[in-house]
Image (tube, rainbow, N blue to C red):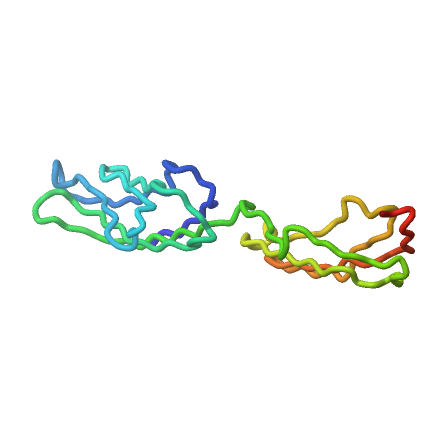
Length: 178
């Protein structure tokens, strides 16, 4: 059995692993050919049928679509009778940071009265990311807090999901901030 891991951005054509079998016969009967027989229905993998046993990537990987592949390869001699052996290959697709976080809204609007008390929560923001692990960690920041009038608080972040609230951090004055 073979167990390998490759990142989802591995280029098509990359040799992922080589399987090997040997046969004691001499001459043409000692030649081995390799075939993928089960579990490669999506045609993600190709095998060099010649003596190399190289298994390469024939189609791009996407961890968010499928994170694990299991397929079976046969090694058989080309003599008569055909003798063969099988092995199971397990390929784990490793995540890369290829997905942008998606917020629950494209833009946020709020109307505040200048008598709004400091500390009032104005909006809640949340986001999701289809990556996993550290590639799915998110944070929030303000690009312009209008002289610290606004702040972010109650930040919650686990891989794949994050949320926060925007709250009033200073006194509003309509004549200054319109």
